[in-house]
Amino acid sequence: MNKILLLSLVRACLLLAVPAAFASDVYPNKPIRLMVGFPPGGPADIAARIIAMGLQDILKQNVVVENRTGAGGNIASQMVAQAPADGYTLLVATASLTLNPLISTNAGYDAIKDFVPVALVATQANALAVSAGVAAKTVSELQGLIKTQKMAVATSGVGTSSDLSATNLFKVLWKSDVTMVPYRGAGPAGIALASGEPQIGFMTITGVLPLHQQGKVRILAVVNDKRLPGLPAIPTMAEAGYPELTPSWTAVFAPAGTPPAVVKRLNDATNAVMATPEFKEKFTQQAMLAADSRTPAQLQDYMRSEVQTWERLVKAMGNSLK
Image (cartoon, rainbow, N blue to C red; front, side):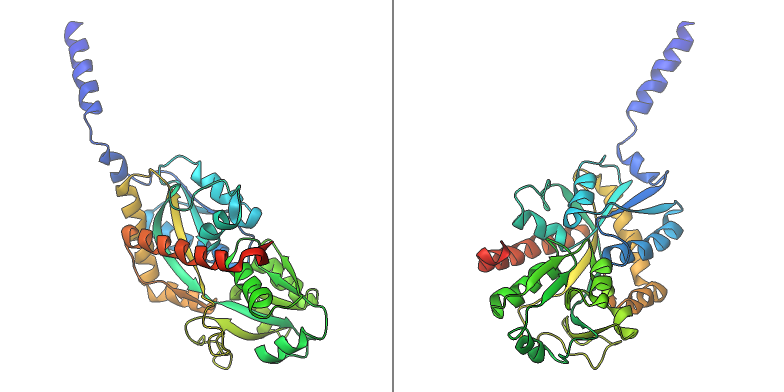
């Protein structure tokens, strides 16, 4: 009996002595959830579903996308910030993750302190578009048109890069009297624009590209470093005279405190997915550019620079955001 007891104690001690890294060695051993703060049709949702397919093959586990919409992505962000830091609940977010805390007193999270970056997935252009019935064919024509009639602008949602960029363009740079109408994502905003109410849209291009191709809306310019391969005739906003407007991005985040080995496993897997021609093409078809591989540390530096960039813009815009 004493011998059995002794063996049991020895075994228990050995189990306790197993390095914490062991848990990451067997990761993942159950399904992974990718939380998205926007409805289907937007860049975060599209990117999450593309990445989920690739991660399932590499990690040999189910990867499920869950849309928890509302508050410009804040609801999903708060859920992931409060989730167990074990690598099984992740956030697929856009630049709104860094923007919301800058313009809201109750975002419910800190973009730097509450998350650890896992991988940069893609960059995507914002698009300035009008419904098919609007006469403007260029950015300058639209600027002239809004001086003569009352118009409204659909955006991807409060706290998104499209909403802040649109407010900067229409309210600060153009000093116009347009009404800003934030929707719950680029998908709903695009559908509203196609109906003609509101008549103008400024949103991530995924929300309007199919509608532009169908002739239901007309893209006047894109916010991107260069013209998009699929839209070679559409100028960039920089070409139209507005180089200060910058494109958005989509990235994967884990709750702060997630073991570094788990983060590295996810980073390696995501980068492997993004490196394949098949998945690069999937993003290209959505007018998104698959990101180059970055380590979590490099992405952390990038996020800090993004916060600083948008913080400067928010301060410059002042009362225009109210």
